[in-house]
Length: 133
Image (tube, rainbow, N blue to C red):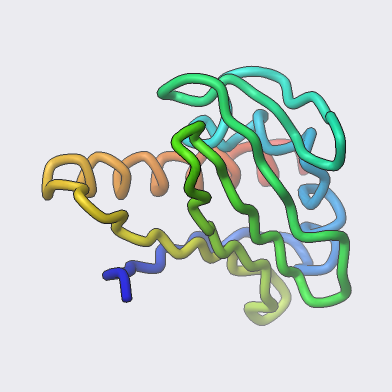
């Protein structure tokens, strides 16, 4: 089992409307800099992009009624990193939650940097959505 931390951001938007706005893979680069630093391009059911550490392949959970936006990232080393991502109701708004798993061999500094990156991306999503209201 891997150590895990879950981080979230509250967004002033109906959860279902928010999910519909952001579930498509091509919307991720607008706010998720920790995932991709380029436009995503689809190839053979996977999405390809330039990640922070080089080329990546991403598989996304299909559209669903539950706000699940999980993705599996292949960093090119043969193992996929599972990234659970959820949009859930929080009153009349939404909570976006991302679980970060500490990967084998990851030192404290790298995990801390990933935590900062996740929180920066969640804040970017909040600004993107609430700024467009």
